[in-house]
Amino acid sequence: MAQLLKGAPVAAALSAELANRSDALKAQGVTPTLAILRVGERPDDISYETGAVKRCEKTGIAVKKVLLPAGSTSEELLKAVRQINGDPAVHGCLMLRPLPDADAEWAACCMLSPEKDVDGVTPSALGTVFTGRGAGYPPCTAQACMEILSYYGIPLDGKRAVVIGRSLVVGRPVSMLLQRRNATVTMCHSRTADLPAVCREADVLIAAAGQAGMVDASYVRSGQVVIDVGIHVNEAGKLCGDAAFDAVEPVVEAITPVPGGVGAVTTAVLAKHVVEAAERCL
Ligand code: NAD
Image (cartoon, rainbow, N blue to C red):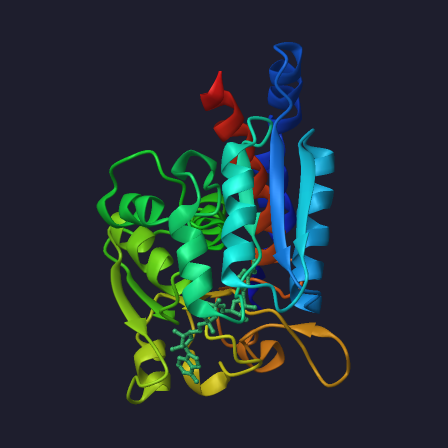
């Protein structure tokens, strides 16, 4: 039976000091504040937003929702970003993605003030992830994977890490962060040949393909650690990940559950970034 790498204790450790730090900021007249920018009413976005708001409540962070109707133009989106940039009460911005218009999304990412970029969306933050230099924050989900690996003491130095997915949100940044911890990283994608064979070579397998239950028993072997980033609702209406948990869990050494794994840690990383961004303002 695999060790369950639950997110709750990792999130608790990350959040432990945050409420105190928020109080200290408030005593100096600064309320750490997160703007959440959402376009439309996608259930995935609303569910992530709900988790983020709860985490902010627990850690003394105020939330300002900026809601645009589905079908908003790129100009309207950029105007909202400009307002967030210009609002001195806001220290961080979470833009719920993906947006239907990828070009508008990238333009908004480029426009956001780097000092308010608590989710690693700006070219500047991605530059920090890539170079290890600068003050940018990594994307919260990618960082959440790293926090789980650190918390559970999973060795990375000299280990083989395989990442399924090459998005800017998860796959690419987590590959860079793993590399920085001296793992030998293979980044896979939808055109990777014989993906199960590549995955079986991993010591640490990060599944971020966005395909429910794709990682089955043929992708894994004993001794592996699996970090499942995927979040989906299956036919039975239950949350599940990219890994077919019942098939994978008996084979591997450790695995994150879905729900209760990476998602729980992502909002804690976000809260930490917001408090840090507010502290930097002082
Ligand atoms: P995305 O769709 O932008 O990227 C998916 C990547 O996986 C792409 O690079 C694609 O090439 C690759 N891919 C898709 N199908 C594949 C296949 N069959 N074989 C190999 N590679 C394949 O998705 P994303 O934004 O990176 O998110 C990935 C998953 O993580 C989604 O399920 C999303 O809901 C979830 N997610 C979770 C959190 C969290 O906090 N836990 C946060 C963000 C995203």
